[in-house]
Image (cartoon, rainbow, N blue to C red; front, side):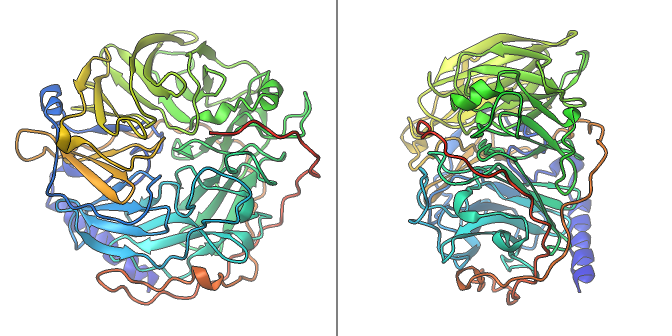
Length: 565
């Protein structure tokens, strides 16, 4: 039956492809559009003149229920036409008509979000926080939901993206996956990634660094959810805090961890690092597969997380090395590291002070005729800042431009063809509540936020919008907003930029995932579909195989850290 469903879905996709021009593949299936987490959208409708006259579509309904911390997604190819997928912190999931904003299907029965009982934190309620991911081949939507109960648990779900029905064998109860994972201490802030048939979910702790949390990445095989693997930092702490979560070159996964506790100089235990994981996920522990600055322990002591921003993969032709990964930390530095050989505890390929603290956000990267840039929000100064990476041996980082901007959103970028007319977009989240656009080479204002109709409400820090078919969609509390370029019918978006070249794979250790007897999720997590149209009944989740629990060091007392934003 699974095979029949798969081939039926594949036929639908092929037929849809056959009737559309090749540049009309506009699906936005993941955070920041690509596995590299570059945040780049190619859409020929977004010329500077069109973008300057952007207007909100006041006929777009977009009504949802719940706070939104996750980026919306855009999916075509199904029987309901183009859809916008939105998940809320109240554990509600919606498929909206991309033209009208009306509800195609909704799931409000996932289970109650957590409103009390957590050891600390600054998000309430806590339900679906990280951005989901979609697999177009199987027409599946994956997300992590924290569900209230005794105990509180994380569940990883798979829904039919066209109907909202829960797929057989899902959800996966992460507590009972045999990993030694404790949901109460872990938060999924970061986006999920789907790489070669495995969906990866990153976890941090909660603001305040409370409880015995670790930086975790959990992997579930999408064609057999009974196979679950995981990697965690050896030391307590080391959360994966950035909004874009897991980046990938198509083979390996990259995450950046924060500060750990009860460590000592010379005994690195997973924190303050760029970590490269192999399929599973597995971690070799070899210096080629992690990088931590020489002062990592000082960063630990100061709660100055290297992982203030998610990993972003950047290719710079002509540079040596040319295949890079960027880390932006709370210490105000940008670090470029060779992603073919991260180097262990060592100096980076190049670093530069960028005069700005990064917390919890995503950066973006793009290339124009003038060079390759990365752009981010400097949180303490409320500035959007762009820096240029110059090809050299080693490459260099130089300041490009900055603009003051009232808000805390993460940037993303449009170009008309991949290199021309680059525009950096950002929402003044929890600030002026407006959408802003800036010239990618100069920082000059392209779109100043519009008039009364363009004012939004309920914006959330660190989130970003997405682009599809001449429109920008921004998901906020209880409302999705749609902004259209001028000039009539939107131009189809060309195929997104290719994933950066995969880096060599280190020898893979024995996989951590081995099958075990399963446990049925708590009653609060048993899905009863309310999707419209009515999906086929959900099945009781099958058993999730266990892996051998990984030992963690005995927890020692630690000083109370300063509050985490």
